[in-house]
Image (tube, rainbow, N blue to C red; front, top):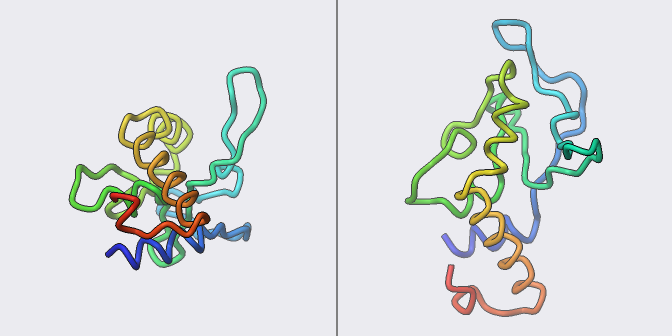
Length: 125
């Protein structure tokens, strides 16, 4: 598993930039605008962690997916998330969650250690 995780972290999340995402049964679909979040003051930031799966027509949280194995899962880890009607509030809630923050930090730390050529065992993940 560590080698698989190492490869994923090296590649990083791949963002699909197309605009023709499939619609669900209610006529709603994912949009690339969800790759950006908004601070209360109106500034935007990139959700580097957010990935879209063509295979499942759903989104996942990159760090939560690869670092939460064997632990409590969220809507954005196991089967993906595709409730486009509630996506804005659910993404905000996910970003604020303790689990997401923990796995995001693990991802950044793991990536930084890999750049320094430290071994997987030294990362204690």
